[in-house]
Image 1 (cartoon, rainbow, N blue to C red):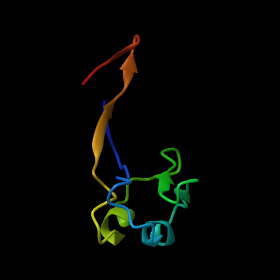
Image 2 (image 1 turned 120 degrees about the horizontal axis):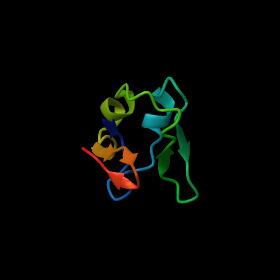
Image 3 (image 1 turned 90 degrees about the horizontal axis):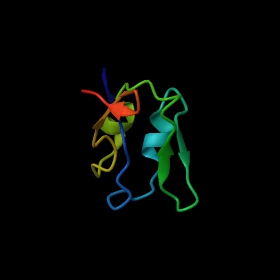
Length: 74
């Protein structure tokens, strides 16, 4: 089963905090380098952070496949 996760591109992030402020689930926290990180357990994939980022740093979604028997399956 595929699940889309959001990621933050630290090269594009300006560290403005817009994504953190708008997240209704509190899934973003500032890392030591100042770039927010997304807690995938709290994230509900609503896309609010993606829409809030004017720089395109949030939401370059990637797909992770669930592991089954130690191997990824699509």
